[in-house]
Amino acid sequence: MKKLLLIMALLSFTQVALIAQTVEPSAETQKTEKVGKKKKGDKEKKGDKEKKEKEPKKPAAERAIEYSTKLKAALNLTDEQFTQVLKVNTEVLMKRDALKDNPDKEAAKAQRKEIKEYRQTEFMKIFTDDQETAFKNMKTKGKNPKKKKEEILKADDDDDDDNN
Image: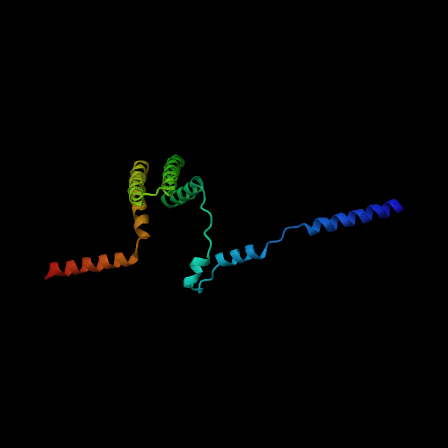
């Protein structure tokens, strides 16, 4: 009987020790989680941008997979096209990441432009005609709407001049 009581007491102490060691999120982790979540109506203050810490950038391969997957869904790429696009994206993102340490900003800018052109030419080799036009439309959709509006207004003005 004494042995049984001794074993039960020993087990209860070990359980208490195990429960005490469970990791609960710290106050700092909870703050960073709350900062990332914003409601629709929340407006960002000027000082908030400076207070936010930048999240570490994902590796090039991971970012390439994400972008390639988005392209696959948007352009209905085949599996073969997807692997080719993934290869190009991985290569391009690795080159771009290598440029970030370049102290010569002008040279880095020129190289980024070359990399962008390389990506475009490789994509055009991979895509079908329909996918190519969908890709171009996808790119222009995200451009500055104010510029588009100005271009439309300018085109309307040109049309008016032609009519007179």
